[in-house]
Image 1 (cartoon, rainbow, N blue to C red):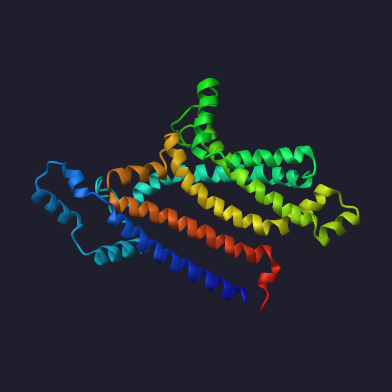
Image 2: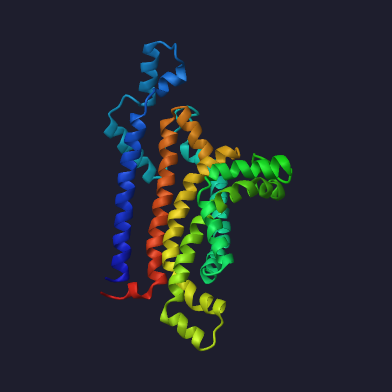
Length: 317
């Protein structure tokens, strides 16, 4: 199969997955209990006023019509208008997106910088006490939920030591120093847990490389252990690690919602929780659809990265 056909097939899977996801998101939001018109007018509102509000908001139209209008709007970049604030959903998401992107991006970068050297060390020293210690440390990290790590980090570094602010957010353009200090704890809370997962996969991939003929040949002709691993082993080990990275990046997006609540960060997580509590279905649909789109894009990029990392996949078969 040629590269072009592989790319086209992956694109078809991406579009189909996005379509199915949009249907499921719309139906789940429509099935949620409660009535946004009742929420807006109050529990004691006149039923006729509630019905009039539902008609004004378009909530009494058939579900297929509402779905097609929603999907058609998204194809043109229009995610609809918030039922409560009456502001475009795109504007509300754009105002919060930067916080979540910084949080997820920095957490993944820190997780990789921690996991790769620790995983390689644990693999190379797997028969020694320090290698066992590194593996045991990653197992402990696997058992720690991100929100609990955030609470403990806040208690230690913000409450006890008073080194960092416990919550809140300052824009980068306003004060870079305070921006960084407010992100340290949430980034570490996410990164430590994700790094613990990655360490296990890096360790397994490197152990497999250590048994391969090309690595033994490199060692036989005079390469030292770590240079041989970096030069000949990392690329071959990267195939399995990249798969896990894609899955973990998707997990980070979900974990960021919880961490933003713990540290009072004004990101997509806080926006989504507020929209759910207020029954703002249009805002909920738009935010969840954006998160699903991001996860599907990540998975597609991971699949396509195999063509770069594994030359065997680029040939005709």
